[in-house]
Amino acid sequence: LTVKEGTVYPDSIADIISVPGKVLGTDKKYGILVNTGKGVYCIRDIQPECRKSMSWKAFLNGHPEIIGSVLGGEL
Image 1 (tube, rainbow, N blue to C red):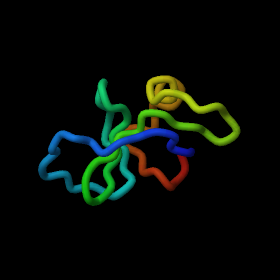
Image 2 (image 1 turned 60 degrees about the vertical axis):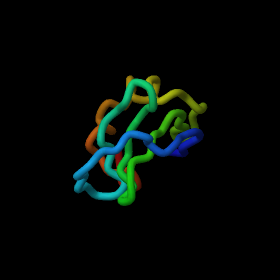
Image 3 (image 1 turned 135 degrees about the horizontal axis):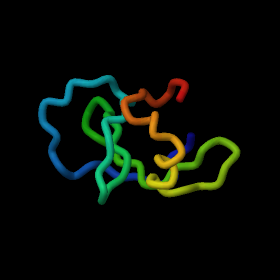
């Protein structure tokens, strides 16, 4: 996977104790929420290997199992 567009999540999510790279869930406005160890990063556009870039919603439709997984590992 390649992240094509994203941003730092602006809302404070206090008391997150999670592995860096863990997909925490989604936010309708910001996209897929990923723990970084120092905050939360929002993935808005993503490109699966050998595929075209797509919105986070389109990606999630085909890969709902990403929620709760740790990026950098196998999906």
